[in-house]
Figure (tube, rainbow, N blue to C red):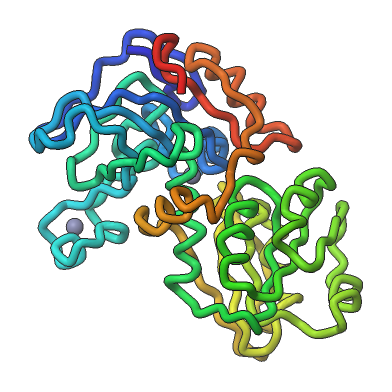
Length: 331
Ligand SMILES: [Zn+2]
Ligand SMILES: [Zn+2]
């Protein structure tokens, strides 16, 4: 089958074996989304080798659970050992023996077929189109913030970053009616978020926390969500958060982050890493149209043009680039 592989360099292959794992379902990929994490893996993040891709929608073609066959599904990307305490409690996201679709020890979704256990697959309601369904995984990641901290209408929240994930985080956090500010670099991307946020700031090369704070009334923020994908995001977050406030870290970049930590101690700031979320909440937001994602799609490109798609996804103005898995199955 065709697939986009990374083995130290990115390549399009036509001779990749169809992945078949004992006890798992075989899913024909309809389409898949390129995420910042995929771009970072190509730069060395996570040390992954294999077929990339973890945001997808597909059709189940084979499954030990026959009720799934023919269903249109999305898939939870963490596959646990199914034996440890975490897995037995129904949450494999931190199983130490886990594999992760297209990120850790398991071939991913930029291919004609992928393999996942039936328990990872969730049927997509009819109200959600294929291209909307691709956003389930990153919306779930955005929703994870609300599982980790409580945000109320009176919370003052700033999101750093205007990329794909930041745009979804803003849409998810807007559901809480909190006082939302967005800091980004690209005028057009900032405008995309303008319905949901009260204050928008465009920063250029040097971030100026003092001027940002002045424009929002001088008060620091209760919560800073760092989703810039850049090592400069954390120092900016620290300068914007109030004493005893919370920083949520969403960026996964391959670089290390040198940062002065004493303000974190002195101001007793909580820094919380935040990764994968639950899919049901994301699907409910998409099905009810509470979150519209259609304006976040930049382009649809066929899998066999996948290398070009990666170039496009890496352009600063790009949002979600969708890979169509095969000529016959346009999503
Ligand atoms: Zn992702
Ligand atoms: Zn486990």
